[in-house]
Image 1 (cartoon, helix red, strand yellow):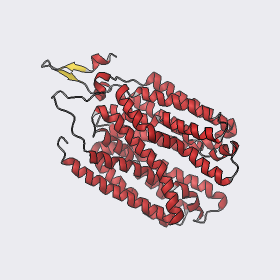
Image 2 (tube, rainbow, N blue to C red):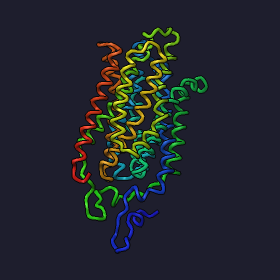
Image 3 (cartoon, helix red, strand yellow):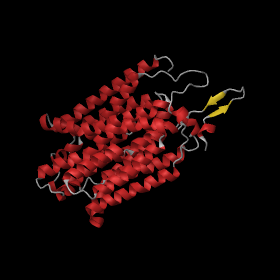
Image 4 (cartoon, helix red, strand yellow):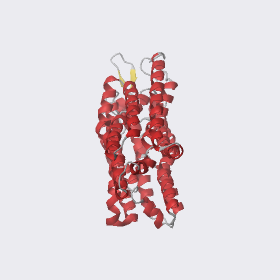
Length: 425
């Protein structure tokens, strides 16, 4: 399709009307969503499946001290999220300038290559550096949010982003399960090659199936609509509140991760069963989110994303509190599952609200900042949770996290009220 020919049309009165990026890509957004869901699932599956055997791989690379193995396993795992947090705004800016599809291809091909190279690492330094590079050049899920968020119709964007979130959550849930048995078949190093091959399939689908009508002459610049008006003014308070909230959502979900095993051990679970029960509890949150992500996204389409964000923040804060008083591991698993269900409504609704709060030519960059905020929360959460758990107590982690989420609910209520008084809103 010729972008120049499709970027405008002639109205009955003879005026030239420029079509927006979303309007020109309306025929493609469903097929692109399918590929993005599959690609997000496979890339996050490949990145998370090393969790069960990462300490063993670190040990193979020459680390013998148990404490050092734990420490460097955490560094190697977190390096990818740290790298993504750094470069997500850059890739979002380039998506605004050159299109969304090139960013998807870059992420998929880059991650397929780097994942395979991790299987060839000779020492700990190479492992950490390659995990960092995977984050710096990867981020398929982040690029998918930019594409889906800018192509899906406004009235369906919440549902579409919810479906995308479901694919990512499923990858994070299935990944550790696959990583638990795959090394027994192909070896630890072979597992990385399998992961690279899976991502390569996503890269091929992206190249062949994904369609995009991107016109740099109009899409990379500030667009004036047919009436001669500039896009609506942006309430920076709303954007800032949403970015802070996105960081807190991942912080809340990850703050308990470093101490779940220890916490379950204090609930009287036999030592031989602690690791297994901890895995169930960790998976409960992701499973709960998978059940409700698309539903909450559709709800945001109907009643407004701001209401869903505030409601889910309050609900998550409330569900966090009783987790500090459980006496059995299964009680914690149920509450974590409920928390996952309420958390699921947040990220798609936040992405939808941010997307429709900025002009098209800035959407990729702003959604990139959103991804950076999320991954920052994923890095900071375990650090804060471990610090509070070590110096104040494990149960205090739940109280502090609940308080932060309730503060975010108030912040979003305030920002939403201010946005109603903004001209053009």
